[in-house]
Length: 241
Image (cartoon, rainbow, N blue to C red; front, top):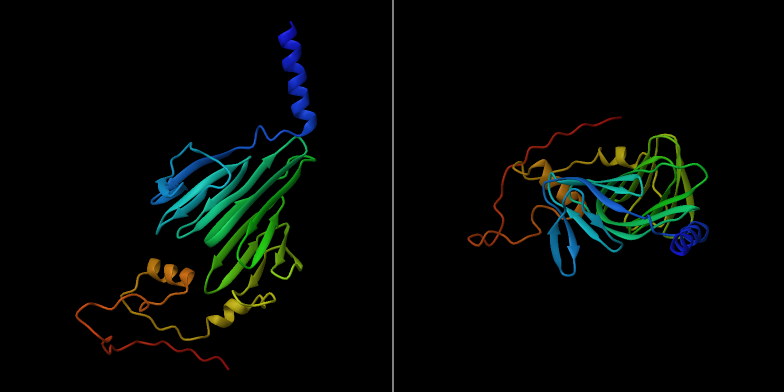
């Protein structure tokens, strides 16, 4: 009888003091080369695996992973590196903070009743706060940070500490070296520039180069060649007046 009373009191204490007992990060699914870092070693992610705060996750080409974080869904797209900074769940609030070094994250965050919900994604240039909506967050060394929300709203704090509200099928863009957010049509403007690359470059290689900010010729040249050969390049040019 005394033991039963003790456990009841302990259970009530957990509830009223806001326990983090039920905070949980589970790997729901993976495809391809999806790994997490344990110590100095990268190990494969597996379905059903439980992750802890501080876990670093990386995905390769045509690879992805899906995490369930306290009931919220985080899809880690290909060529992405991220870290779980913190994760808390109490009787009054739900608070998750992840870091995106480069790549793409898709977050689906639901709001449960009066439970205060905060799901933050930090990049080198901005931090977005998701509450009860879906977000697509892309970060690259070359193009900076792009945050898109289909419906609802979220807040993005730039590196200067200024908060911007993004709502209703809108996109927030801030370049890697820009002190202020860019015009939402910046991506359309970039499409008007001529892009020349090796015709043998695959789409996956192009995606990797875009994220890393490197072109085809930043690595070592072939051992038998001291200079790159002159090769013909095909250019499609469209001029709009």
